[in-house]
Image (cartoon, rainbow, N blue to C red; front, side):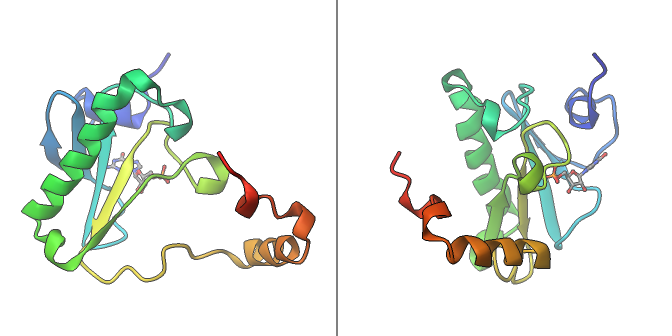
Length: 140
Ligand code: 5GP
């Protein structure tokens, strides 16, 4: 099967602005940055999304967080703050099917979620219908 873009970047088969690489993790600048600092951090194992993580992936996952902290410190984002995001699936807005975390910062980032108008309408409908409102009542 043909490799996707992040597999090619991981394997040095596609160019990128590399920020960091070690045994577990590759980090590179996003090609279309949404903030002065916008870095993508991927595990060196192909995992499609957060839906697909396994217990055995814990070394990859913990190193993503440790590397995010390391990069943030290196860029002095730790002083002003930053955000680490992973988009999962269609509603999450995931475009590339390879688990990745966006490390963004360098300016105030505003509200965490900015819903499109169409989603605000759906949210209102859900809130007005208590029976459908399962999200607040889940106990895992
Ligand atoms: P998603 O929407 O899947 O969470 O984010 C995918 C991100 O990958 C986007 O922010 C997009 O700009 C970035 N991206 C897509 N193709 C490339 C590429 O070829 N190189 C780099 N560096 N980033 C890419």
